Amino acid sequence: AVVSTQSTGDDKVTEILQEVTAKIESQPDPIQVEVANGDENKTEAESTSLNKESSEIAEMEQNQPPKPTKTHQQKDFRKMATDAAKALDGMSISDKAQSKSGSSTPSSRGSFLDNMPSKNDDKKTLSPSLLRLYIDEVEEDDKVSIRDFIRHLKRTGLRPFGDPRLTEMMHKLSNDPSGLLTIQSEIGCKKFMNVEEFIEATSKNAYLLNKALSSNLIIPEFPDFCKEIATIYKKLLGVKGGLNAQYIPQLARVNPDFFGISICTVDGQRFAIGDTDIPFCIQSCSKALNYAINVAELGPDKVHQHLGKEPSGIGFNQISLDKNGLPHNPMINPGAIACCSVLKNMWSLDDRFDYTINEYKKMAGNEYIGFSNATFLSEKSCADQNFAIGYFLKEHGVFPENTDLKQTLDLYFQLCSVEATAESSAVIAATLANGGVCPITQESCITPDAVRNTLSLMYSCGMYDYSGEWAFEVGLPGKSGVAGSIFIVVPN
Image (cartoon, rainbow, N blue to C red):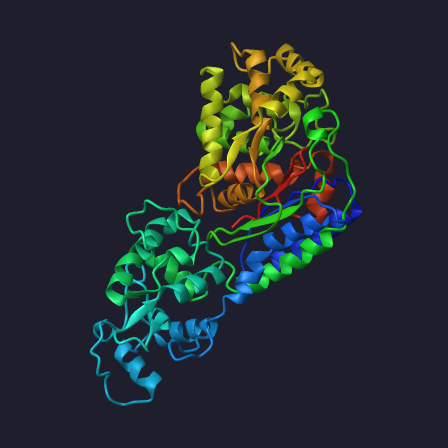
């Protein structure tokens, strides 16, 4: 999970974060959250934008099954999904049809469903009991209501039109099965589909769909959970403390009223409210990711030849070493610069940057990761303190042999200037929460050991000289960045 806010050192923020933690821990399993700072005095235009950005909650509430008409029967999806899952054992589709109609005689249609087995391998086909929920029985032949299916899927927190795992399935359900067009809503999908075609279209995602539609994802009652997060979001609208980083001119100009929360769970359930699609520089949140990449590539022993693993208890940009003559940890500037000196240090600077940003993109499930050249130049132009740290580390033999200090510092500034959104950051957090496997692509990005070491240091050192109080009050691995984000991971 991730929470980001520009208000730092504000008692109100700590109070709200404690409430966020309480809400998280009340769930049966972990989740991911991302927040950025805001102001309750929104203009009329901003209020309109806020209403638009809160549409996911409204959509979840509105996506109830249609009222009874001549062409549809009312379906209480939540209750029916639960009942269907319980009824699956020992009950055939034909039996269920008879029970539903109150008739003791078999269906006269002899439909495809009647010939399906009573049980199925849930990794290969959609459960017959769940499939029955989407059959429109008023049709001449049994047909699946695609729109009912998609609406129910959205209520589980999955994003049918944005989840890479579901892309192939959605093309098959669309009016453009060739995949030449990008389908963004139910309007681009077929209204109905033959049962045989639907089973074939969903077969590759059967395991995920059975898990979602029978309320067995990490957060089963996702709409209710989202309402809780929206309540916390509204409380945070009044937090006005803190100040933009003034020592980097480009960051000082960022609108401090940007504010949003984005959630991604280890099952890929998604929720967003507020300014979650506005890019921001990840700044020091990159330190945790760079460390994870290094440890996954080289192992902890080699990496920790150049940096320590203890909290420093001092400011993030202080010129200081631990008792072993190393930077205290990779979450403060000296340790982060040392970490960059290790990162593919035999490669050219351009290849090192490309490699690292591609690793970020993998962790983000190929969602938005960009680069702000203006911020890079702005940060580099006022980096006397970081240059002083660099020369201090070089004098004490911290760097690997033949390290080019200028290139190392350039790489450090560049990676601080990488851009993400609250949405893409939440996916990165979910990847770390999921043991290094991206939940929406199922790609292994970071080794489990590297994730464990990274989260340990985020917990003990990620909030600089506030880390002890953070661990005591919030109790979750976190990493702050001067651009305004607080990156939080709830491990699975």
